[in-house]
Amino acid sequence: MDLLRNFFIFSIFGTTLFFFSFLKQSLGSNENFLHKKQNITSSIHKNKNNDSNIIVKTDVLKVIISKKGGDIKQAKLLKFNKNLKKKLPIKLLDTNKNFVYQAQSGLIGPNGIDNFKNNKRPIYSTQKNFFDFTNSKKKELRVPMTIISKDGSIYTKTFIFKKKEYSIQVEFSIFNNSKKTIKVSMLGQLVQTINIKQQKKNIKNSDSSFRTLRGSAFSSHNNKYKKYTFDKIKKEKDLNITTKSGWVAMIQKYFVSAWIPKNNGNNTIYTHSCKNNTTLIGYKSDLIKIKPNSKTNINSILWVGPEIQEKMASISPYLDLTVDYGWLWFLSQPLFKLLKFLYYIFGNWGIAIIGITVITKIFMHPFNRLQYISMQKIKSLNPKINNIKEKYSSDKKKMTQEIINLYKRENINPLSSIFPVLIQMPIFLSLYYMLMGSVELRHAPFIFWIQDLSSQDPYFILPILMGISMYFSQNTNFSQNQENNSIQEKIMKFFPFIFIIFFLWFPAGLVLYYTVSNILTILQQKLFFYKFNK
Image: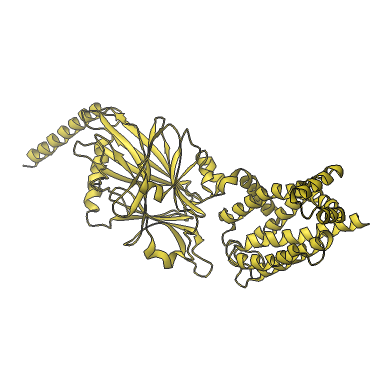
């Protein structure tokens, strides 16, 4: 009996070895397929009753990935709090009853495993449900999710995280174990709720800062950067743009999420307004063919985080333009680089703002000097102008012509006093957009009571100081250039009070810039008029 039993076991063992040898030859380079399939099948069996989500924690991100489709349902930015009082991290992506903001991706096409229209998504299998990358010494963390199709083909979706990085690489690895060529297309899209009335209480002072532009944007080979608001998606026809390069994004103040495809073919950028009060923007690649017994990788990058311009620009061209600097971005960007350089020197964003204000004033000094000279020249002509007004009081046309002739004889251009102001306006506006839109100033402390340069002064001290400095600047100007008790002077004296009201709710960093600018203007005026009178 023992001999017979040993012979039986030996026969089974020999038959198994022969089968494995034959399978190895048929699979070629994919000799580990059966071993992988057994492990995957085992993990599927183990995960039947497990949680439907995977949690991944790095030093800067905490994300929740759904096993159904492998979509990112929630993303917390661990280095950015909602506000200074509550030390709770921002949820850039989130999924709840009232609000949805997800980063979805999958494989569509003739042999795709994802059907987004009917919500038929694959249920992936994983080795574990929690990945902690905070204290790891490895350079990257790979989170693989796998599924085996009916024909035996293996689909692996891997999320790759790196330390101190807000970019997540998403890689689809497809092994075709069927006898037919597989045709698939990779899709990456961002979905968000349009109407957020139910979240007004949370948004008013929240991290999301929806008070500015909230919408989508894209880049293609024809458009470096194009905003596309949710209202536009809802009212107009869906986008359908074919491009070899580019990206799609959803933007808001300080933060952005974006899909950047990494393939050699074309991609189609599209938008769609859904019936369930959501809108989406995404891309899909051209069809990719995988021959039988062969393997293909398809890659994409997902950015989920703050608008850090240098890092975003290194990931994809023009992605840094999602920082909303308005139509003066070409001036705001170099000014921000200068501000950042000053921050590296002083280590304080408030002092850096003061530094950039001083540099701006030095740059504008020649133009301001021309303005003061022009105003003094016009002032010296006031007696002659008054005589002309009295002489031709009944003939307005003749009066205007005589005043123009007087300016010509004295070689004075009245517009020369306005020209420096026109030059300064783009600089002031670009500084305004730069200080309002840079995430680096968010929750950045200055001194004493100013602990957040991106929010209003809690005690309104800076706006009051700004109004006082503006009043003294105007007073110095009128005392030198206007007649006493003129109507213009009386009207202009109300301006500081109006500006104080406006600036009460402006970010402290912006009010700091205007206050310092007014103080420097007073010093410039005093110095110029002293030299001029002397």
